[in-house]
Image (cartoon, rainbow, N blue to C red; front, side):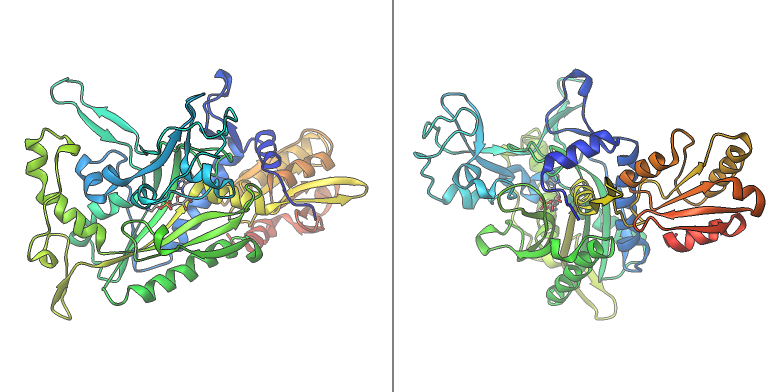
Length: 488
Ligand code: GAP
């Protein structure tokens, strides 16, 4: 079994089969931005759908949300992003290329996530022997400086009342800002979670590695609210659930692992954090973050209570975030607007939060890499994507064996019937062997072929992608047979 060993192989497969294209390719491409093609868009939808089904639809204690990307600027002051969401960079004095200092220090860590800016600023940085990755000049860098990662934009047409907004760098804050709304409008009781899938934006200094780290990406996040004291149990519970989600969808266990964050690596809000890592085929270390699971304590809700108390200052300073300081917490902070009243226990508190935060694009990449396989069949190489049926972009392909009206009509009718239940692709062009190979590369679990025997006994062949075994199934049993096989 040959596996993808280089990122280039997956990039070329994605282009060749219409999974993922470079954005604006006809204009030479836009760095670090990607478009999902016909197969990619189905795959990505299936990844989102599998996540939503697992964490929202199948549970009684999680509800969904879809917040706007643009939010009130104070959200980002309260969350800490406005002041702290930055990477420490140094600029090459020869070619002006800016590089993350942690990447200059140790290329093995080139794909590591953001280092806490306060920790990075406090550390000693000797860049005298470091090589500029762009021009190769040694030790010719500026002093390290912070580089803010949030994208800015302007809202409003009038010069006087336009204001600076930020494209959200995580979906999580929309959930915290709606905590009260969800409490007041639904019947949720703690412990419960709010889940959201949506785009996030970060002006990353280093992108690379295809869709692994981009400036525009999609996140799938859950903020799970629980009573302080129960947080550690919920943390363990979510760790197990999220790890198993990847395994249940076909990722091989040996390619997944947990990595606990060191205390100096923890984000400013976290009591504990663990990454689910996948063995990606790039970087000298290979193991890279797929998802982070953090114990965010009551940090965010408390911070937003401070943010709410600071609103008047924000108006007075005409929206200048740098000129305002968040108000201290109120003395009766635990009774604030974002607190929770436990009716049964008759007590009020600010809930703790466990946050499983996954990347949809990064998951798509992991599912693609893990599903890829090559094997020798009758002296030729067969390339295939062994996707779990729930993720496969096309579930079934239907072919007439040869281009004959009577076979084409039956095949068309079968395809139209199956489309009511799952994505189905009709193809009558070229030799049937070649059509099978195309579907193998697209990861289609089953191919249905209508042939001469269909006219005699109303049966068709059903070919299994993984084993290539073919069986005959009667047309009136076909839908039930495929639904059972696909578990759909
Ligand atoms: N709310 C917590 C949070 O945003 P994070 O570790 O920064 O945590 C969570 O991001 C996940 O989002 C990551 O594990 C990764 O899958 C995805 N992600 C983060 N930055 C990304 C980027 N620049 N490109 C693609 N995916 C990214």
